[in-house]
Amino acid sequence: MAFSLFIPSQPFPLVPTLLLLVLLHASLLEPSHGARISKDASTRHLFESRNTKHPNKCGELVALSQCSQNSKCSWCTSEVLDDMCFTKSEAWRLPQQVYSCSLIR
Image (cartoon, rainbow, N blue to C red; front, side):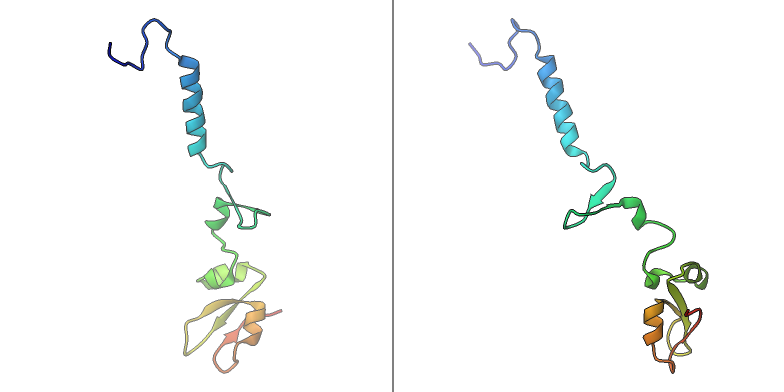
């Protein structure tokens, strides 16, 4: 007699099979549903916050209009280097011979 996984005399084990499929599917999904946990697991960050129109870091802002919308940032111009957005504390430390920064309050 040949070995077979399917035994015709017993009904198809539908419930255990469906349960196995549900568990397998759940294990493949992201456990935090759209959030990532920081390395120390103390805070959660939404994926969407990384892709906002207003990055949190002043150095990521590339236009004067974007930089001026963030109260923690200051737009600095230079004749020698590219104009850039800096945090206000960074703007205070820049050499005045190279950069001229606006809106430092």
